Amino acid sequence: MSCPVCLRPIGVVEVGLPRSDKVDRFSFVSVVRIFDEYAEGLRGLEEYSHAIVLWHFHEAKTPRLTLKPWGREDLPEVGIFATRFPSRPNPLALTIVKIVEVDPPRLRVMGLDAWSGSPVLDIKPYDHLDVVNEFRTPDWFEEFFKETRGGLPHWLGPRR
Image (cartoon, rainbow, N blue to C red; front, side):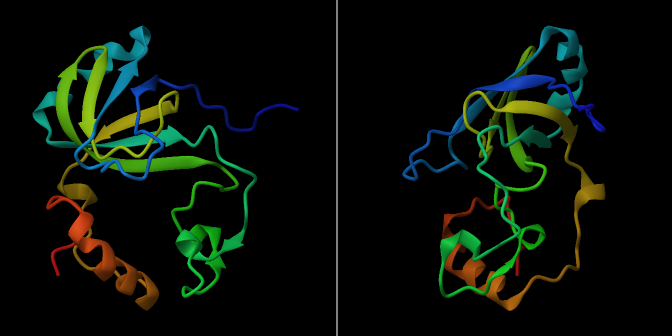
């Protein structure tokens, strides 16, 4: 079977988020190693404070099309495309990270929720073109967000 869309990783998460839920990903420094043939692509990234990392959920389970977010019974069952759950038809992840250091071929960041060994597919700078000022989310998400807001860094999430 041929691959209709083929992506080649540009790097790998060398030091990823530990699999313990006791680690705060927003204060943990992850290390992404860019493969040598792409390392020059990091030039200029140090001028940005944040970046978008596109990576592959390489250990995702069989995709599910509906689920209760975060496995919580008090939340409604929704479709996979209404969640950020990793087990998806195409297990891709997009994470906005805070840049700690650009030291080619390595990039040190905070906020990355990828595990060690996760393939990195692309990195883009985060700038004002990616900020959405007016957006809508479901009520159940807003309730969850209120419960967890204290655990988020000041640079993530809306100021409401």
